[in-house]
Length: 239
Image 1 (cartoon, rainbow, N blue to C red):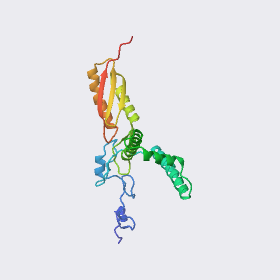
Image 2 (image 1 turned 120 degrees about the vertical axis):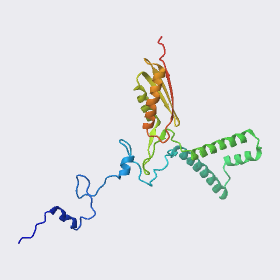
Image 3 (image 1 turned 60 degrees about the horizontal axis):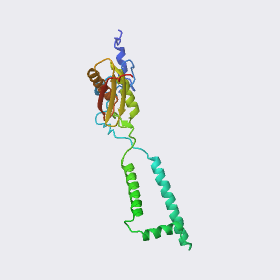
């Protein structure tokens, strides 16, 4: 009497050691799945960057800070020269040598001139202006030509140059029917568009420009989309 043969041969791998806990993706059996979770697939539409995982904040899209290498180098060089000159003069006086002539003259002038003297007020004003300038450089980020873009990942920061953004808006503007030429002046908060219409009514051209440029501004992906200011005019008469 023969034993019944197992007709479910494909199920014998279920108890094979080393195969537990592995899931295959579609078309790749035996490999671990690397697909994104379903919620991220739904959140990220076609052509859009993937949304951050739940509980993960992409961070604030602030402006980029300038290194200020040139002002810092100039200030450091001036301080080095002044500190070296004073240190040399103090060492000379400690070595029983006469002080340098410029320091003696400076001390004499400061002792003789009153506080309301014109030169004293001028020097104080220049020093105060330089100090305010340095404080302004230290407290402001600089790099005004870079427009921060929206952050979709916490470890990635991006920016768009003003000229590049203006070029995109200008190219989008000249694609509107009836626009002969366009100029775009891009700022951090506002984008001024000046267009010339040649065969359509200016009101109709402006309406189409508002719609097209609004979509173009949102398509730039900026953290703070600039406000649009659109003006349409007729070309000037020749001659």
